[in-house]
Amino acid sequence: MTSQQRKIRKMLADKEGILLVHFYARPEIQEIADVLGDSLLLAQSAASSDAKVIVFAGVHFMAQSAAMLSPQKTILLPRVDAGCPLADMADAASVKKMKMEEPDAVFMAYVNSTAEVKAESDICCTSSNALKIIKTLPPAKKVVMLPDGNLARHVASVTGRQIIAWKGCCPIHQALTVEEVRECKQKYPQAPFAAHPECRQEVLALADFVGSTSAIIRFARETNANQIIIGTEEGILTELQKQNPGKIFIPASPSLVCIDMKKITLDDIERSLETMQPVITVPRDIGKAAKNALDRMLTAS
Ligand code: CIZ
Image (cartoon, rainbow, N blue to C red; front, side, top):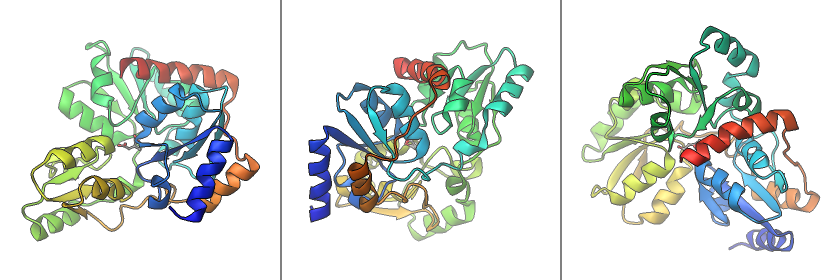
């Protein structure tokens, strides 16, 4: 541990705080996490922790979820501008309009959405539990999945459910092309390709495994292959390499880097703990409705 990492750990201990870190965050932050995980695990950890302060090394919607699940704790997001372009692709007014057009549909919001959009939705899901959550919904019901159209199409193709896919995408996963994957497969013919469901359908069609970050990590651990092509944000490579020192992980594209997930640095965390800013809160009325959708997901998970 560097002296700065030690200092941050000490500040966290002094303030009875914990550091929740997403797999896509910078490696030096992953190293000092209390909990390292996907948004589902981080949301569950925020809800169950008895810490007074939660420092979130992820993006804004994750810190918002923590604030709604743990209103009595101080939630710090060291860079308030760490946003999510996918979450910004749906707004409450458009969801309200769609609800008028599809009055009988169940609205299922991917956690990568704003609190306002969650508040308009019936239930949330993450990429690790979307298939499980959809099974809890009445089979005859049409489902509107938002804001990620690729995840929606993937869930529809696996389950055969009637799903209306919102026109949104994660620009990072969307940018991965069939040509890039084919090139990797040619170079590493023995390597299975593990892809995130936020990738385009034609990219997923080339995948040997499709799953969330935690599912990809499990797949990498369990497969006999010792070279694996990875189709998700490169931050996951830190944990993959740590868990599997003998295996080789090949990013499917050099462009699989989310600048928002990389915004928070150790300096930002140290400053945030010093100043106890920026605090993330959600207006009470929105928070109450959005928490209902989150709670339904957590109960069904
Ligand atoms: O749900 C998450 O944490 C995200 C953004 C990706 C994943 O698959 O874990």
